[in-house]
Every structure is written in structure tokens, then in C-alpha cells.
Length: 141
Ligand code: DQA
Image (cartoon, rainbow, N blue to C red; front, side, top):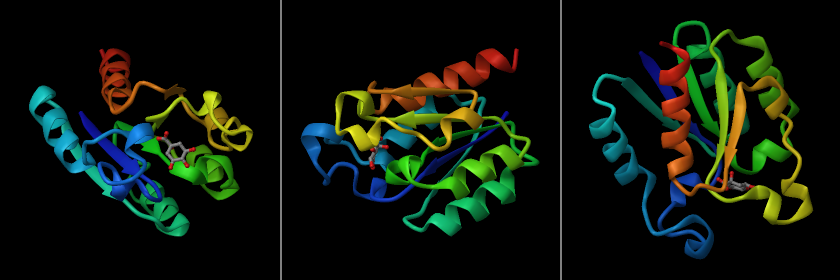
């Protein structure tokens, strides 16, 4: 099973950025623990701060991978383009967030991608990604 994890803007700063919200771990370290835990899964990881690059990546893998887990960061709330890209590809996407976006500022309550996703997991810390993997494994059985 091929799963791509995509992180959007500012998520390259995990472990350094607003630690009280996003925690102490870098995504690279967490990604290693995921690879060890799910050794049967063929993972790829991509991060970009650029909206068009995120869209290009969705197009590139969206007809060949089995699953995409995407934390689009702030673009979740603003990007019609990312929402349209998810609607246009075949690979199913789960939207994830580290923080509970519904307990934060009102502008974080809206997602322009959620309606084109299988579902949304938010507020579970980095474990949000792990829960999305478990759901895709469950759906692929
Ligand atoms: C985030 C929530 C977004 O509102 C924010 O812009 C982020 C991270 C999260 O994982 O909690 O960059 O997607």
C-alpha cells in the first residue's frame, strides 16, 4: 500500500514553532516512528510552503497512490485550488490537523478541502496522522 503524507506551509517548523500548540517533535522524527510502526506500508513524505507545489504534488501522485494524508496548514482555510485538486484526483485524501482547529480562531473553522476528502482528523496532536493511516489500512482490507 502506497501512502503519501503531504504537509503544507510552516509545518517544516514543527518542533520549533509554537510548541504549546504543535508540540516538541519534528515531523522528520515522527515520520521515522510511523515508518517503523507500519513497516508494510510504502510511505512517501512531501512538504512545501508553496500552494502551487502542493497542487502539483497532488496531481503527480493522485492517480497512482492508494492514499494521501494531507495537512494543508493555513491553506486548508483559504485554498480553493487545493480543494479543486483533491476533487480532481482519484486517490482518496484524509485531511489532518495537529491542533483542534475548532477550538481556535474562527477563520480556522472553515476548510475548503474537507468536502472533497474521505474525512477529517483534528486535535489529536501528531497522532492525527497515525489515526489517518489506521483508517486507510482499514478501508483497504
Ligand atoms: C494546522 C492548523 C492550521 O490552522 C494552521 O494554519 C497550521 C497547522 C494544524 O495542524 O493544526 O499551520 O493545520
